[in-house]
Length: 155
Image (cartoon, rainbow, N blue to C red; front, side):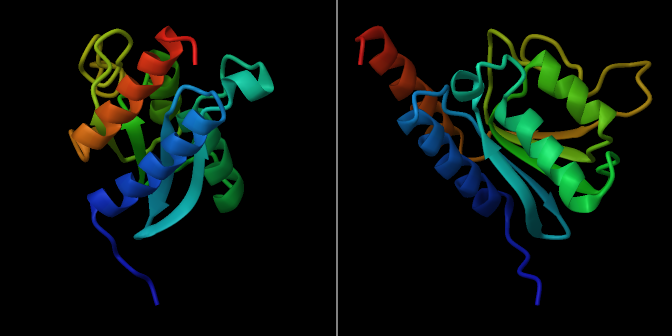
């Protein structure tokens, strides 16, 4: 039996992953990829752990979804992220043919889903992604705010 959940339910899982990243000293971003109402992959940032600039939550979730499905074409999937994807992640989302992205908080400094630039709906690209923003925005914003507040305080 497949349990069809709402955007908020999937975003709650992404927020949990963001808190896991937070407690590991990573920028607290969590992401999940969903197909047919089921989570097929999930990840949080691992840049510090891996010492890899590409180890963003979205990138890792996309890689794991491709492995789980046995294809790089992630059509008919939705990616949930606690924060608006950066240009690198947005490019990977387009390349993977992900149908929809749902994010919590905007990233006014590096967002590529409409805040700074819009890679997800860029004219001329061979794939455009539906975007829903602001799902559990307060929780996602608080996660980032608390992380950077502690970082500035040295703790």
